[in-house]
Amino acid sequence: MDIKKRKLLVPAKLKPEDTIGIAAPGSPFNLKEFKMGVSVLESMGFKTYCPEGIFNKNGYLAGGDESRAAVLNDLFADRRIKAILCARGGFGSMRVLSLLDYDIICKNPKIFVGYSDATALLSFLYEKCSLVTFHGPMVTTLSEASKRTRLAMFSTLTNRSDFEIKLRKGVSLKTGITSGTLLGGNLATLCHLVGTSCLPSYRGHILFIEEKGEALYRIDRMLTHMKLAGCFDGLAGLLLGAFTDCGPAKDIFKVVTRIFGETDIPILAGFDGGHGKENITIPFGIKTILDAGRKNISFKWQQTG
Image (tube, rainbow, N blue to C red; front, side, top):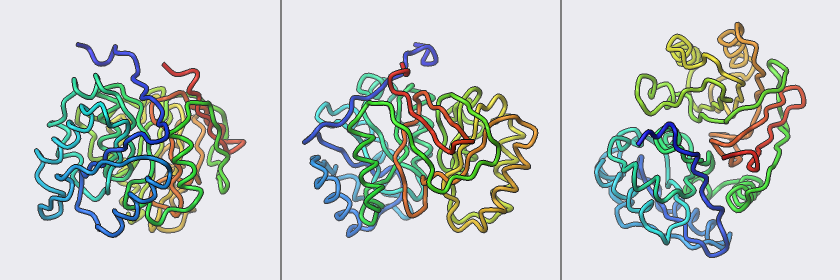
């Protein structure tokens, strides 16, 4: 079956008392933070399911590759599970991509949420399965998430109404209005997917990127690498999230402006998404309008499909 021609898979919204399954596709996690995050989910009115395998440890991985992949496949196959939330990022999601079952996922589309290392899964699920996913908090980060972050997550996962986000500290690096499907995530993870079949084409799309703890020259190198690889050809727009512990914002903006200087696309910075103090949940895969002049982004569920 040609996955490219399959209709976009839009998972059903969450309802009260729906069950959220927890996966650990990357690194081991802090048990105290995990339990606190689970309590946050349950305080929202959801049930949680924690497969025994997610507590495994294998060095810097939360168990073996086969075990971590099996948890994901089983969660997608389980009809009782309505959403899947990653426990933590770290590293490891890329290692399970070749072990995931396309057919199981496509036959059981459901909400999938994560960021950072889980960017590999967000990209895979869109490119290979045409599944709408969600860039947002993970279980351990929910433990200390702001009220705004928690409310945004609940609202985005339980609604399918169009919505708009006005950037509180938005910076227009290049004004203009554009529309397209929003995709992306953690810059380093996206860069390491270049050359694989798991990285979507961004032609006609709006790209979102964020990062943490990377030196300015490394950000420059990653963006330059992706540009030389043709990843930005035909890009419709660019949205910058948090670049935490990456140096002064003005220096980040200079690098971005230079890399994308030859393109006439709107570029908006300052979105509260990623490794910053707030991590607002947003859907990947639906029609999005970016207005860099007005410093807002609009998500159009009703025009998606």
